Length: 228
Image (cartoon, rainbow, N blue to C red; front, top):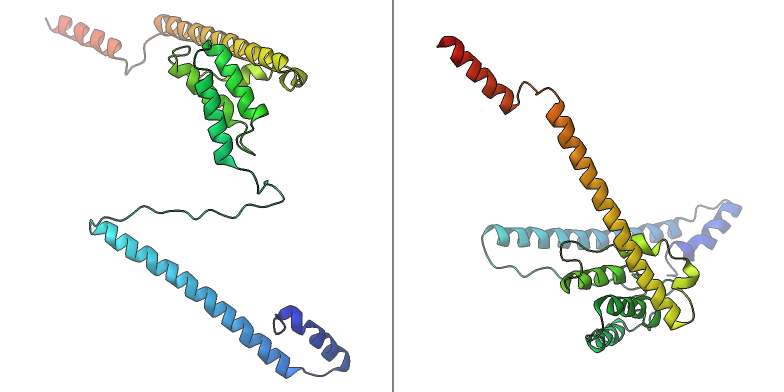
């Protein structure tokens, strides 16, 4: 570090004041910079060679193991480095097993609050909990043909209720959110049915297009009758 840029900066400043050239410092700095650039180029060329070798093996039909991305170190300013994700996930799975005898809607509310409030499985992925609960509702047959979007109902519930200190109030807020989400889904279903019916009525009363099969069939029948 003493020979890097910050280390020789005071020497450059003194040379500027005295008007001296400072040639030795410039030569050393240039050599260090060249060595760093050579190391970076060598690493990049090594990565390129590895990619080319892997591509050649794949094209030749050889078995190539899948890539394993190296986990990036987490930033201590954003993440809690002591956060044990595996332990928290195992605790949440224990809640899943312990609520198997509960009604499915109540079970979903309990699991959701355990995910985002009691256990907090993931630090910055609280949004994943409602998706997992929606998958559970579909798995248990409550929403067999779709994933219930709880977010549509949760936005109608005040935050004071969703984050209440009393556990019973939080569960009631979750149940109300599921209820509101179901109502929103029914309204959207009715809206789509009305739009479909309107399109069918408009297509039945409108004049057929020239490339419509019905129009072409009628033209063919008329042409054949004139020839007869």
